[in-house]
Image 1 (spheres, rainbow, N blue to C red):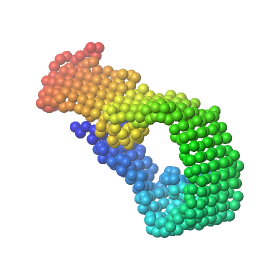
Image 2: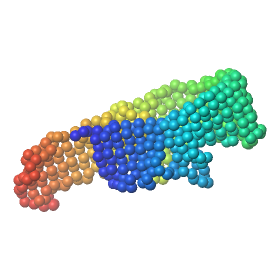
Image 3: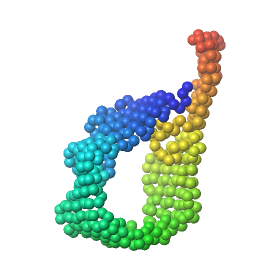
Image 4: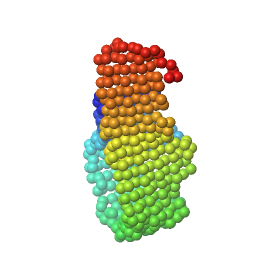
Length: 449
């Protein structure tokens, strides 16, 4: 009666509830559940071991119970030798609390606090940010006053300072050396001096930039328009003249030609990308021993056709979208066609959008497989038709409903039972005005008939 707004479904060990677009919940027999409230506003996940987590717009995160999940965020790295249970709770960007290998931490931004393993730093401490802050990463400590203008760099055999953007200098004996003047116009850097691939960088931006190392060298003039890159490890060369309109790449695994907006054909290892009359038509391909994938696109998301096949498992999928008119999906011989397709082309594999939002605008849907089974739904089951083998059912709500389980067993209703006719091997029956008793007649029908 409520079209796409209310849903209740049981399948195998899982049960689903939905009040679209406000609420969706799926739970299985092992008490593993997933809940979305006005996705992506709030997400809640619960596992069978008693742990759960809450996410609000990616800004609020809270975990309940113990978990061994990898640490979220930019600086999350788990030791290969020793697993550590990391916890994080935050109301971004104001409140942060967690436990890491370094210990517990708490921060109330911008007033005071300490963070561990955030924003690619081992530790961040601050008081009345940006008045004062201190960061640590791989033994390098940076003290900032009125960030980013004044800083002092220190560490083992390491020192430096900066008065941004006027002048700055820092160095670590045998590791690196950096200088800048009127940043970002003039700067020079000597990096990875303790490795087999030391790098030298010199710049008078945007007129000239040079990067040189044993493995790779690049020169840019009038950044970013004219440049040359030579990669000696992957054995290719790239010329941009001018970027991004003209690019020539030469190499065994990396090669191609780009002359936009007319034509582009570039190969990067196992991936090949082609443009014809950019941005009208684009082809993306990937071919390996494990997977074969091709995606054809017209005007970015206006039309998209993706085909994928996995050789080890034999799985195959195809996904077609003509925004905003229709979408088509085929997975291992099971096809699904629907009208309309408003958001799916932009998030083609997002399960929450598929469950909570997409059914609201799909006024027509059809699913079928290679065995002849199919189901059709129009205007959110105002009319639906389904066939499974010899079994057939259809309904035009609320006028007519028909079901045939076999050649000898049929069921027909008018106005949901005002007139109800049934026929089976035991005979025929007619019920009127929703009454539970009715008229019966006819001898039992033979199964062969």
